[in-house]
Amino acid sequence: MSRETEEKTVEKLKALREAYSEQLPFRVQQIEALALDVRREGASQQSLRSLKLAIRSLAGSSKALGLLGFTDAARDFELFLASHVSDSHLDSTEIEELLASHVWTLKKACMEITRRELTDTADPRGDDLGPQRASRVLYFLSANDAVARDLSFEVSCFGFALRRFQEPAKLHRALEQAVPAAVMIDAQPFAWGLEEVRRIDELRRRWELSPALLLLSSRSDLESRIEAVRAGGDGYYVHPLETRKLIERLDRSARHSGSDPYRVLIVHGEYGSGLGHALTLQRAGMSTVMVGEPAEVWKELVEFRPEAILIDLTPREAGGDLIGAVIRQQDAYVNIPIVFLSTDTSLEAQLRALHAEADDLLLEPVDENYLVSTLSHHVQRARALKGFVATDGLTGLLTHSEFVRRMEVEVDRALRTSGNLSYAILDIDHLNSINETFGHLSGDSVLTNLARLLVRRLRRADLVGRWGGDELVVVMPETDGSSALRVLGHVREMFAGIQHRSADEEFSPTFSCGLVALDQASTAESLHKAARRMLAAARVQGRNRVVLGTG
Image (tube, rainbow, N blue to C red; front, top):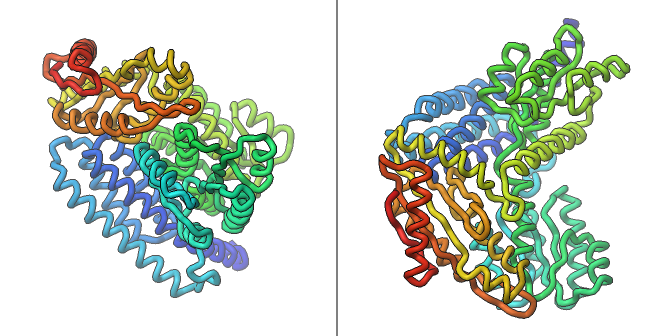
């Protein structure tokens, strides 16, 4: 290697380390949040797996950049998780203590790197690094106390927090500190609301932010809606606000900026370029693992479970197209998006990619924004297609068949480990009457709101599905009957307090619930039959209640 080439490599590595150090605190915050999920969900398999993947990605990238102190802390954390991931006898107190200790060690190592980098290179932007994300918060600019109070309660039922502002200047300052899921402006008068929409649109463009910008108005005419779009608005709502539609929009925004990062496997023979792509994707919030040898790909397919694969197609000896073709031969990975990178613009290179059933071919050097956009698009599409197969079109919950399949797995696991499990059937009270009085769209809205409330109030490890008609079903692994009764009772109270609107009328629907706890003689079928008996008992006792039995 010539001296000039060596100097360029050193400079490139230095730039990569600086970029990595800048985004490292945010990745550690993400790990801290995942660790909190583990504590909250009682060390479920899903929450521990998510934490392991995030730690593994961080350990690999920090080692590649020579940040050995941080790598050691991450590897220790990874070893702890590996040794306890299947240890169902580890009590929650010990888990909390060990998790807290490892998180703190990781944060200290991160602070040391940040301090060292700040000493070595001053950032010309100083502390003006832009706002952080608050993806389950709604900023609401309104002078109406009653509207703000009612909206705050209703969004809180679905896991969102409302932060109200009465002065635009205070809202602007808040946006410089955190990015909410959306900003809603109560436009009274309408012209003032439009002007404020323009100001906030300019602010988010300056910061390159992406919160949804929504307008709430008393005017429903087409001209007003067009003016709102011209001002930069993303959504338009009319008084009285139909909360269901707002929650749907907030959920979309929260998912777009949520904490579940896209997982990308990078197969690249050139260390510097591959690492540069990895850091670009990590800065965009993705989780990456990079491998240089084809033999390492199969191990990562199983352990990392990538949602997209970025493969260096050149030089020919690296066999990038062959790797892609072999991956496509495996039924389990046939739907994973594969994107090739190449410096070859010839038709032959395009044909090689086509033969390997690639989803895309990007030419090096590739623009960073285009790389992020391309992979984001492919993962979003893959997730959507996967969701269409497994989820109900109206509620977004698991379909009947998918729910039964997963329920049988959870019941078998609980019986095998002598663990707890609870199962519930929920039924909207008098849904036929609601359909007849307010229309079937209102009935669908009630069912969708209950589905969304369950998803927000239950753990990620719990299963929620639509059994059919107006019945929803829930499996709560590692949960005894009394705990499930307390949780579902709280959901019932919250649902009964939500005001649903149809035209100019308001109504408050309720649900009845049959709940059973697993015993050692249970099967998935016997649990369902027992829960249905408890549901019948809830109806006989007057509805709007949860009745607990045994399976």
